[in-house]
Amino acid sequence: MSTARLKRTDWRGIRGVIVDLDGTMVDTAGDFHAAVNAMLAALAHLHPHLGPLAPLAREQIVSFVGKGSENLIRRVLDARLSPAHANGMFADALALYDREYIHINGQFSHVYPGVAEGLAALKGAGLRLACVTNKPHNFTEPLLARTGLARFFELVYGGDAFALRKPDPLPLLKVAEAFRLEAAEMAAIGDSENDARAARAAGMGVLLVPYGYNHGNPVQGVDADGIVDSIAQAAEVLASHCR
Image (cartoon, rainbow, N blue to C red; front, top):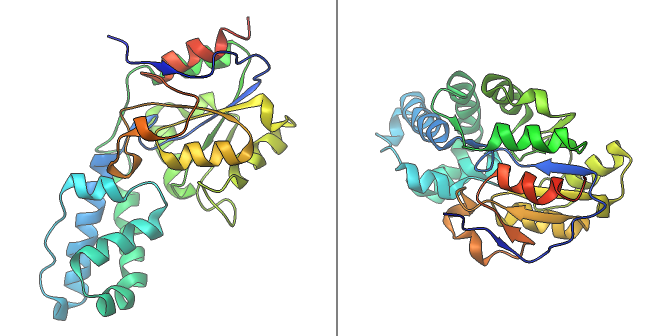
């Protein structure tokens, strides 16, 4: 049964769409869970004086996701170490996490239902597609390739592409600039308040899916133009105005 909830009904004039990655197109919670706990084990091995660092639960790790790797690792360290140790271990922890994630990337992930169909429909309607994520570029490109989603996107910006990342509007505005479109001609699809705030600040429409992460909070409370069940349903909403 559909749970779509829409505020905006007129999407005429939309020519480009920006799609988030983690929690929107791909469920990467398993990758985060495996990489974070592998990092904690490696950090304890590298610094024996810390003692054993107990693994974190998947749900807790997912609640930390969405604001980039640096924020994720700081939250993880705060959950397992004293403030002094957390600050001192950050550089090592981030390097170990990057090493572990590169090896794990995509192994414990899956594409959400309706994503490939939805992207194909958006592209088929003549809409230009970009992926903008806070995930680092060296994680993003391999994941898009591994999942077969890379072929849909004309442009991909990772979280380290610019000085600022979502919820700042800069990456979204950079897409509009690259596409030579006005912000009002763009729409964003995401799963979190970060996506909605970035789109709002950029002057773009925004649709959210309800199955993602949103830092562990219900997405229904986020200011957006609508909630759709899937990327396929987002395509139905947006592409219907391109016919």
